Length: 203
Image (tube, rainbow, N blue to C red):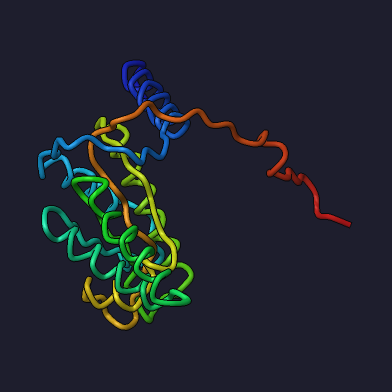
């Protein structure tokens, strides 16, 4: 039987988790202060506790800081040039792309390395759950974090730079640092707009 103190502690923990889920926001502006690597390790550790079918642990992370971010920007810039309609457009797009990884002191690439024993969609979902765990951990640790994706992040140039295996599925990058802005205010649709409750089989 649970003791009263144990129940009280569990209720307190539950409230903190639910509050973190509701209060977390994507914050895209970071200060120049560099978080201690041990804090980033805590964020990564949270990612490794995501649910995963067959216990395959398909999530993989590449943590970029310092000049490694510059290299990522170069790969993104090359992808922007390749995708552009002409040279002038390409140069403008390249100049914008190269600086994007420098918006935060850490950029964490997140991808799934699917195990052939499990359906690929489940492996991707597990890696996405790992990314969400990391966002929540960053919030709990007082960090700013934002999940970014898009054609440049999915590009062959970025895949080569990150040395992803051929079977890897890129999910995006997390920009992580200390916040340089107030969290934006957000609303969500009412829960009853998106949830259906069934207590008998439909006719």
